[in-house]
Image 1 (cartoon, rainbow, N blue to C red):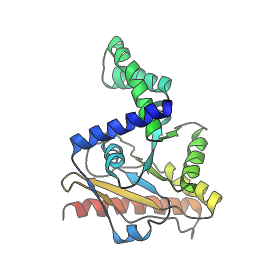
Image 2: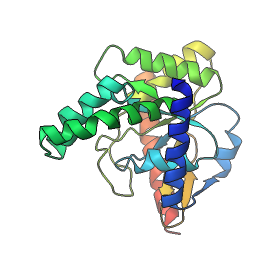
Image 3: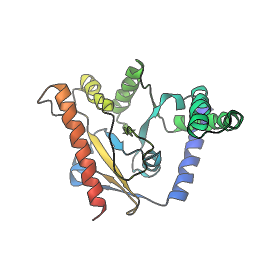
Length: 233
């Protein structure tokens, strides 16, 4: 029953987003199409939720998003909205925060189940669970969506500084499958009504793991810059 409820919440929210956002189409570079055979990690600029929301609503294949663990269960979701979002961030009185956070916590937690979100246990040893569940999903042919922005409230069109911890998915995936992961940058162009999928970035394992990780992070950022420049053409 809970799964059916979650599915309908997701379908309703996706319908709502599609109605108000207008249609977006997905475009691929030649290198992207050639690397589309296996499961992959798609990386998008958060833009204060705009990136993940539009990606999930309009992408041409299902994506399982990484989501802060507190938003994936009702109690944690209530605490997040009541103790931080509504009171500290928005400055609302506690009584109003509680009144709104309680019903919202049911809807958000249900939506996360509907999108099959993978909980991210930030700053905890439980982060291993995040990687384990992600690798399990990838091994089953599912794709993952990650918004690694350090400043997730940045509403600008360009990708800023990123956390790089998500790149450790490569290490876990390699141990399980003996294969490398493809990390695809996604740029969402409001002007062109387009979700632009860039060239995939992969580990080559020619240097030490940490050096490879640094190179992949830098290359991924460069691919974002290329997509951002293409938007203006």
